[in-house]
Image 1 (spheres, rainbow, N blue to C red):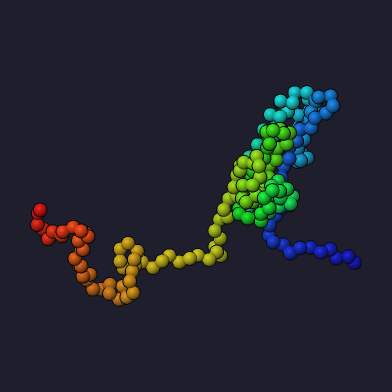
Image 2: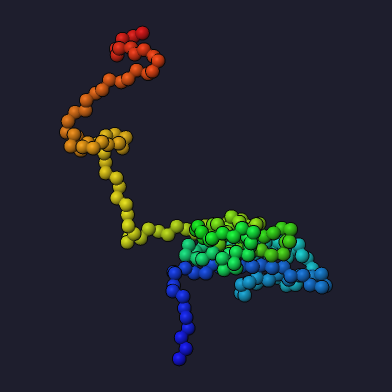
Amino acid sequence: MTTAYSEPSTGRTPGRAWTIRITGHSDRSATVSCSTGGCQMPPRSKNVAALRAFAAQHAAAHARAARVRPDAHCHCRADGCAAHEAAKVSCAGAVVLIVRHDAAVGRVWSVEEVCQTCAALIPNAAVHARAARPAPTASAHTVPAPARSSVPGGFSSPGAEADSGREAVARPRRAPRGGRRSPRGQAH
C-alpha cells in the first residue's frame, strides 16, 4: 500500500488566472485562445485589429464574471513572482483581481487573483476588484464598548464615578498670557 504525502490544509485555495492570447500564423492570420477551455473564440482571421479588440473584451468579461475569493492564495506566488522579478517581496495583503496587458506587446491579456503587494509591483496591471470582507460571525469575539464616563467629552478621572453624586465646583478661567483679564459682567 502506498501513502501519499499531503500538506496540512491552510483553508486557502489557489489563486486563479485566465490568459487570453493572440497567436500569429505564417499566412498573416491570427487566432485568439483562452486558458479556459469552454470559452467560445472567433475563427482564425486576418483582421488582427478585430481579434485584438475581442481579446481585450474577453479579458474584461472574465474580470467582471469572477468574484474575488478572500481565501485565495496569491497566484503570482505560484509562478515564483516572475511577473515582478526585479522586486522580490513576500506576498501580503488582501487578494485583488488584476487585469494585466502590455500595450507594447499587445498579444497577451491576463486576469489573476494576486495579493495587494504583488499587484502593486506587476507592470501594466490594473486592480479590477477587491475581495469582499467576510461578514462577522456570531462566534467572533467582540470588543465591548468603552464605559460611559461621567465627564462630557469622553474624559474621566480616577474616582469620577464615586464623585458623580456631588456637584461640580466651578473654577475660574485663566486669563490669556500677555493680556489683561476683565472681571465678568463688566463692559470694557
